[in-house]
Amino acid sequence: MIEAIRELQAEGYTLTVDGDTIRYRLRDGIEPQKKKVARLLVELKAHKTEAVSYLRACHDNWQVESVETGPDLRTFAVFSQVLNREVFVSWDSANLDKVFLDGVPYSLEEIATLKDAILEAGD
Image (cartoon, rainbow, N blue to C red; front, side, top):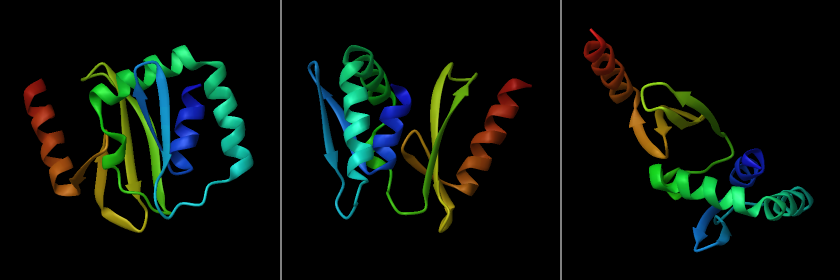
């Protein structure tokens, strides 16, 4: 179910929760694979309760819409032992000067500063 959410996001959809309803909206300028999207929506509906809980938790921690989209955007999730939760990392291979952590853009210089601060705090 989490993979279906990620695949829908990769197809250009923004997913939000309104009460117990999952709302999805296609971002402008994106042409999704319609058959794939239909299959993913069926999977999402089959696991609606779990999907709603997951999306609520994600939206409490990051804003999906703040991630810029493009044909070269790559996103993956990693588990942060520091934050004790999943963190989403995105980057555009056409613009490697910026990385998104949980949808928030950071320059590579800012990432290095964060890394140094974490390492210093661990000393």
